[in-house]
Image (cartoon, rainbow, N blue to C red):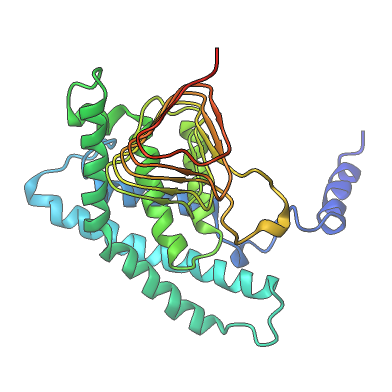
Length: 287
């Protein structure tokens, strides 16, 4: 067996089958860097949780500042790469200058740090909803440390902020990383209100144009999806709207951009819903 010929075949495939490999990695966001940034952002949300670091009052400012500066530096670099890449992909007549990309990227990275207190407030409400709604939960600390649903919501809220700011690629990297970790798939484009409750969570899918109100509860295996996945529907409302105080039990599937689940509804397990449901209705699987 000629090892050199095998190596040559692999190298040839890099040129022949372009679009799969990224040899020029400086021009595309690095997944490991993005995951490292996410870890630091999660630390800022819940300092001292899920880390071996010894956090004391005396060193909290130092540890926080260390991560803030690291996030701004790394996130700026990754956002800049994403912007330059997307500009090239769109084959703009006048590609965005890298210096301008850097300015926009740095501004967005700083804005991400600035929004941390707001996201912390939202995630605290999510954690409180989980504690109040799950009889098995004994404390808020237990929820923060061990509930995959809360981690998925936390990461969604960070990814959603970057998505709203128009950051390419990176929000999806973040969302798919936590999807792989928790089995919960929330597109960063979805709009989710306060006190969101996900229990168990494995197999939940929430599509890009989903709108979810306040105090909504989802259990495992719920799909909030589209009736059709045709490419022509890009940028159109194709996923359902879930109003306030709705509970959706395990295995339920709700599809369609015009489908609205009214306030206070209960959607039973393993149901299939493709039409709007009036407020206060209980939908059960037919026997």
